[in-house]
Image (cartoon, rainbow, N blue to C red; front, side):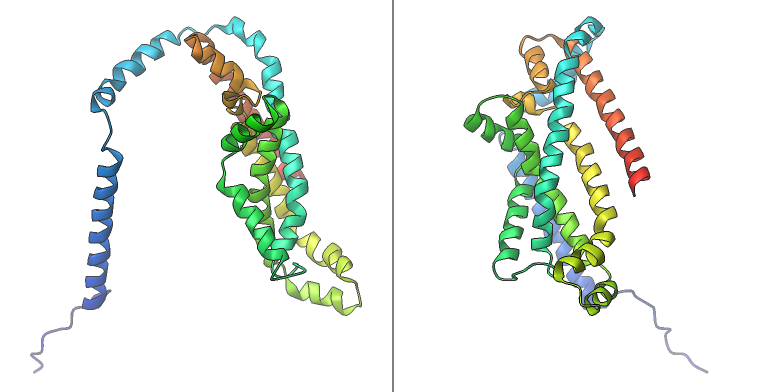
Length: 268
């Protein structure tokens, strides 16, 4: 008769369990430390009073001043133009950068690829609002600063996703075209480009959709668009006008998402 104690199954060994406990303990300690640092200068009186302030502002925002909508058509059109032209400029610049950054298409692993990756990282690390703030200081206020800010932000986003798609192409198809004696340009045109074109189109449309939302706030720093009207209304505490601006931005974003979805379905 076997009287041995049955072995109890455990997902982790005692050593792994101890490591997980230490990691979770370190995570909790880090979270508590970050919370203390974050709230070191917090004025809790204003935090406690925030619901009352929100209720007060909300009551002032209603009813909306719909007559103000007549003054928003041109700023809304400017916002759409900023997003569209900025996206187009960013996509045009991002396309060759993506080929320079991809390991399987770059002409130089030591010079061209690091430079392309640096451009991508620089573009992605700086928000479009900061780009606009810098460009307004350099070029002055206006739509051009907003367009270039959107373009600079879009370069990194589009380039990164496209160069990752280039690195994931089917090399068998590329090798078959190269075996026919095709030049490198022909290999890119007939072996790589057809494989990445759906990803490129989808990424560009998705970035345009994002830029519609980002361009609505560029006017806060003087880069034109409906954000300028938002800043003006908030500076004079015209809360009913702010409600109309919020509604117009919401409708614009919804329409842009619908257009983007229809375009992706038609082109991809």
